[in-house]
Length: 199
Image 1 (cartoon, rainbow, N blue to C red):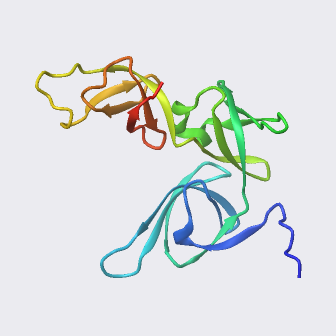
Image 2: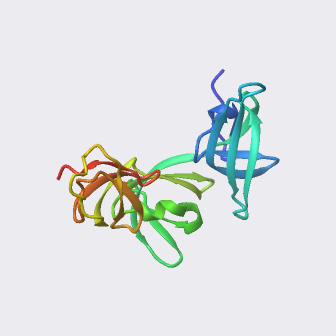
Image 3: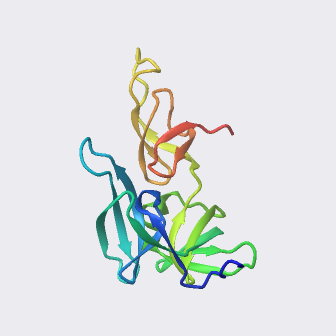
């Protein structure tokens, strides 16, 4: 028997522990995008999956716990590569590089990730029936350190990191030898320093 074609509102049952950030699930006929998913294994008792989610209809945030093996309806979501163009007061604008169609993504969907968006950056956009749900950025970006404390004499390279400000306005911590003006690679997930940029 041939597999059924995917309908627009197709959903599939998955176990709660397999859910990840950006997945969309159907709870009682309402769609929620997952903001964080954490599998918790207590010493005693049943392992659970803690989900922080945002309801797509009105943006309300909710937290739910499921047993890790519980079945959850995961909505069929299209993941496509898009290129970031620009942001205005209304939204963030992306383009599909295949057909040049543009899509406007509301700022509450982009959230904190807005700080890392750079012109022409390739991102992955998840949509459901054409509605933008979530955005996945590249794992890292190159930014410049705009300010940081000077190196204290006698401070060894292995000692603790020092606070610094990135050119996108995000605070991070860097090794003592990194100075203002240095280009560094940071993780888009949390703004943490990874290494000096190679250029």
